[in-house]
Image (cartoon, rainbow, N blue to C red; front, side, top):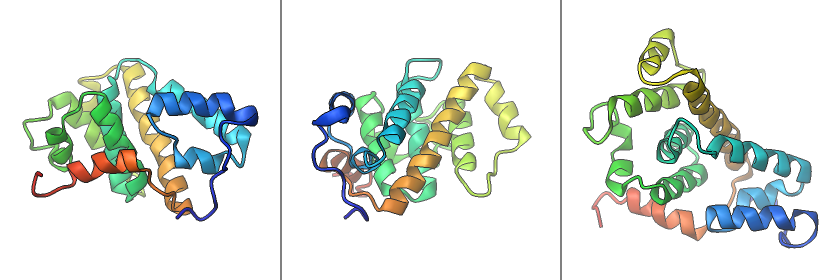
Length: 189
């Protein structure tokens, strides 16, 4: 249970439009947004930031979700790990690939550019940050500056979300939890 209750009437008042869009975009009503709604300006600003980060760009949506997933798993945030697994699934990333994500450096399921991005995501999500110049040299083999900014934006956004949801102990919704359970089933069932 979340440490403070989510708002109970998200589709009424000034936030109705934003929550309607969030539910359409995500496929469910996000509990972290319902908690964040206690400060409407923060919620609106965060939604705009997330929309900009997830907008079409040089990094495809599936890789953005995998970057967020590695970041969230490294931070120990099950809530965000489940959301990114759900997002990856909705953006064409196979369950097999998500199950192998911790072996990205050795798995043939990941190409060199994905490995470079996921390496920076992992090292950039550890505190203190472990990204070094060699990691950026590898990243620059596959991505230009604009794409690198997209990658680091996803990492930074999940830095915020992971701390937010771990601190509030945000209740995980059933829809993303089902996908998370599927990729974490060791028996493959």
